[in-house]
Length: 298
Ligand SMILES: [Zn+2]
Image (cartoon, rainbow, N blue to C red; front, side, top):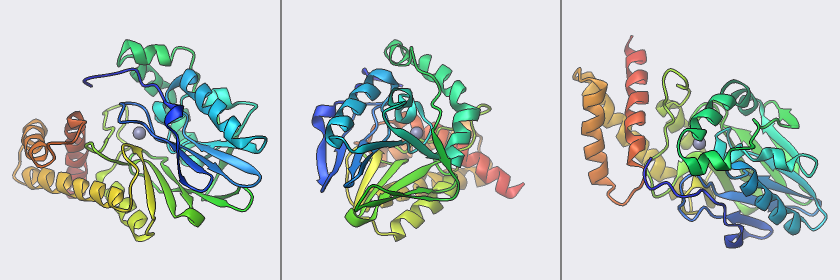
C-alpha cells in the first residue's frame, strides 16, 4: 500500500444524513471506514468501530453523547480490522451483535488478519497494539430486526461477496443502506484475495449481491469507504466488477497467465478510471476472477 497515513477516525466530522442517523465520514483516509450512529427512541446502534481501541473509544464516546441515556448496540459490517477491531472497548457499554457468518470469520480468520495488519505499517501496528479479536455478545442466524424504538433496523447477511460473512445494515424508514466494503467510492473495489490464507472473496457472488441490493432501491447508500451517495454507489461498483470480470475472463479464455492478465487489465482499468485510488486492488481482483474462471471450466 502507498501513502499510508495514520488511520484516525474524525468524529468531529459526523453529519446527519437522515433524522437521528449520523455518519462519521472517512474523509478518504485509507483504513478508516464510514461509521454509522443510528438512533431510535429507546436505543442507538453503532455500525463499525474504526481500527483499534483509540479510534473505537472516540466512537464510543461520541455515540454515548448522541445516545444521551438510550441503550447502545454495536454491529460490524464484516470482520476486517478497520471495521471491527475496536469492539472490545464497547464491552459493558453496548451489546455487540453480529451475523453467524461474520462470527465464524472472526474465529477462523481474525488472528491472521491481526498479524497481517500489524505487519503493514508501524502506524497501523501501533493502532492495533492492545487489540484483541472481537467477541460478539450475541450472534444471530438468518437476518435480524433490531427495534431501536420507533425505528427498526434490519441486519441482513448478504452471502459471500467481499468476505464470507458480510452483512448490510438497512434503515428502511430513512431509505438508508450501510454496505460495508461491498461498496467503496472513489477507488478500485477491494478484493481481499490472499491465497492460501484467504480466498473467500468472490467476484461472481459479489456481483449478484450488488444486483439484489440495487433492486431494493435504497435512497442513500453509505459505502465502507468513500463518499455517501445514492444507488449509483452500488451500480458503479457493479459496473466496475463486471469490467474486471470481462477483461480478466477474455484473456484467461485465450490462455494467458495470471501475471500477464493482471498487468494488462491494470493498464486498461487505470486508464478507464484515472481518478480512482487503490490501484493495488486490481491485481488481487484478477487473481480471484482467474480462479473462479478456472473452477467454472474445470
Ligand atoms: Zn473489508
